[in-house]
Image 1 (cartoon, rainbow, N blue to C red):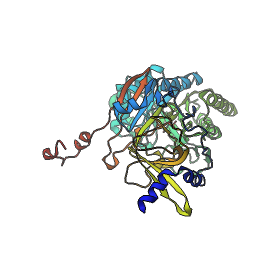
Image 2 (image 1 turned 90 degrees about the horizontal axis):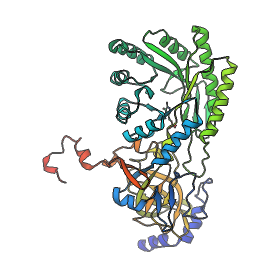
Image 3 (image 1 turned 30 degrees about the horizontal axis):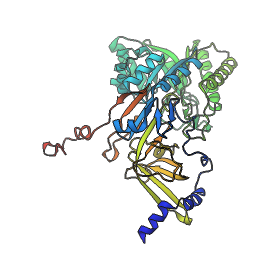
Image 4 (image 1 turned 90 degrees about the vertical axis):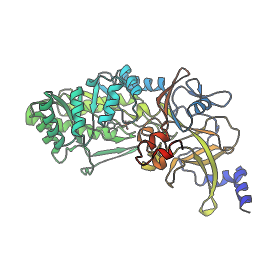
Length: 480
Ligand SMILES: *Cc1c(COP(=O)(O)O)cnc(C)c1O
């Protein structure tokens, strides 16, 4: 009987179709052609060949999976470089820092250096990767709300261009180190504007209950600026404001710009000094699903230029050097994740509905974003085309956690079966870089493809890598 039920669910696509419609989120469109790739979601060198197999810069993804194994992350190198260059050109006259925390390896640092952007790091280890990749230290910025003395020493000794200071403790630590190393520290003061922007909404309040920066509202920001200005070995460059991530609405930047300009005007009034730099941070939104409508770098540039110019004039300030810090807008769209389907299971829901769960060989250990902040993704069948009807699916991982979801809602062909490959677009940012070893998962490799040529950026982690950390894993278990 049980077997009969399963068989029915697996093969009667018609009833699946009818049931699935009512649990479909309103924004998700049933695709007219399930094999079509929405060009807004994919990097520029991805296409589906006549044989139905996805190609990345000339390489078949089934060959890629065969060579490297799944799960894997694959960058479209030309696309990455093009996005980086796009920001540099659209924001000509401004400084553009790639936010390395979105994804960083030595080769990625080298791409950034070659295209000519600056690079932001959030830890001493990221700084070492950037330097190993050949980044000019003067074009590196160091972030972090709790930088250790060692991290600050490394930054100052290697000559990083800017340290974005986040606390009075840090300022004191920097002062001591500049004495010790006989150097000058170039700093920006991170301020909180009270603007918090996420996706399509932002909140602008006086309430600033979070760990980053000095509050403008509370007067700490002005105090920190004056503190840095009065320190003989600190060169105060200016103010830094980062208001959030995956932002689509420039209204949030407008409020933040107004509040930072007012702060800069207050500082000038107090000290007579015009601050030479203003950093507006990153957070520019990208398309994870067909529901997202991001701006191009050109559109962003003209909005931001208009906003800062308007606010600057209102306060009668000299024009500072502006900078921005895009992360996901460069690294996100240029990589896909590739998984192998292990199981397809239909689950009965309350009210007689059903949901199809597609389990793949990765999950929250390689992409925590859906579990961490309900991030949405999209996916397609990658190793073949299908004539089958679309079915609403939930793509989940293999971890022992109910929240281990990769793609909450997506239409995939109803003949989907184990062994098929699923590709998830816009997976380059904050996925592999946030990966964990949950369930002793080994972190997936990251490759890049250019002109049909495969380069490994990060190899797959192995069980031996994990056991090497485990001091109790003795010789008698070696070879297992
Ligand atoms: C994370 C971060 C960024 C980049 O954010 P994206 O959403 O990847 O563009 C830029 N600046 C700061 C200070 C950040 O913390």
